[in-house]
Length: 577
Image 1: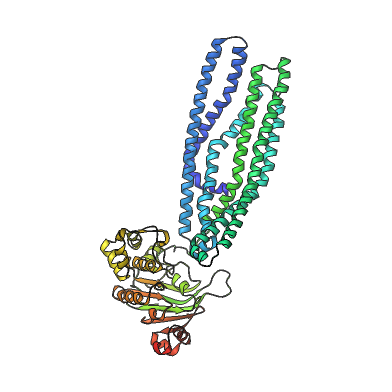
Image 2: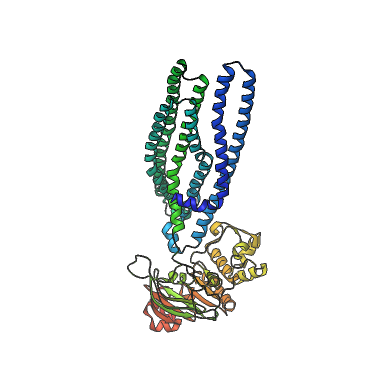
């Protein structure tokens, strides 16, 4: 998966990668040339007392060093540029892929895991790209070139390379083979810590209300200790690598000097050649060490690439149509015909045999006990899920055939848990219509019964809103979400239990203000309170995913036992009548 991810995402940067290879090649060749020049200075200049040769060769070494430095800087520059582009493109790809997911895929991965995959996991692979461009590309060039140059100096010591290089590779390979499963476990542990922390921050009020701080502290400590233990095991293995490398490097240096000294003493080798051979052996082993250093990162990057690939390869269960319909003949009409929905692997469907029609100027209410499928039914309209059987039609066209932008522009959804984005009141309302004027925003706030508390804020429409709307109350959050839907002026309004946090007086005022504003739109209200839905043109009663009654409030009181139970649970039979 790692190679496929790199191949696909680095293809646009082939020119920059070619520049990296070119500059690394030139820089490494220059680095390999320096020991030979140094050997010449010792053997031809110092040994003979030829100062002119020393100065001329030294000047040439200076030129070669400057070339090496310039090429190294250029290679690092282009490598960093490639890595930064890779990280940007990969994060963008994950973002757009997750944006296309239905609620099913988001629930499958989980928000904490998706956040980790788009940040930490991408960063790990990006770091591998940086290190590959700056170190790994040069390692084989230096290794092969070093062997050739060392053999040019003296073939008699070449057997040392046959011992030192395999010893280094085998030692490091054994350590890395034990690190791979630990890196895999570490990413899972990071996900777990993120999940626990996210739950605790989101549910901090519940934790405090039920005095569960000690239990949550213990739960976080367990997740944290599991991550710490895995990180320590990785750290211990990593700590073995550099002492092992240094041991082999130092033993190799001693061996070269020991056996090389004997060859110098016998006249088979010159001192400058011995010095150059030692430097080449160090360069060979250093190239092996650089490759080893990168190989430490490869296992973790491979695990991260697998996790990134899982997201990028997962297709949304809600697929856009191949030939989308962009022209519709009907206005503000929602219809469901024999709709069924079941979750994958579920024994029974959540919804079954759902059929009804909502038209312009009509209010349709959906009521039922908790878990009866009300929110799932509403979610089928904007294609947060797709029906597993039957047809959901908007303006006479199956939503699966309708262009997504056309579909969403015709729907104004106020979800069960209204969410506000960090910004201002105005920026949140303009999610419904980016071009809406301040007058239109105030008009929507008027209808949503939110004008009073927005005017009370010192900055008015420019009042800051925290992430999630945590600096306003639940009722204020609901009213701002309703105003956001009103700003978009859709053909179909979907209110998913959007009045639950409002008191009865505000609820009644809001519904009265909505009627003229939504006179030419179809309105679907999911409600728990009978007072919220009693005035609807038609009320759909759900029970265990089935429609058990459709009619007005008065008709259902006479014909639907389930509805009567709901009414009697909220008020006396006399007041209901």
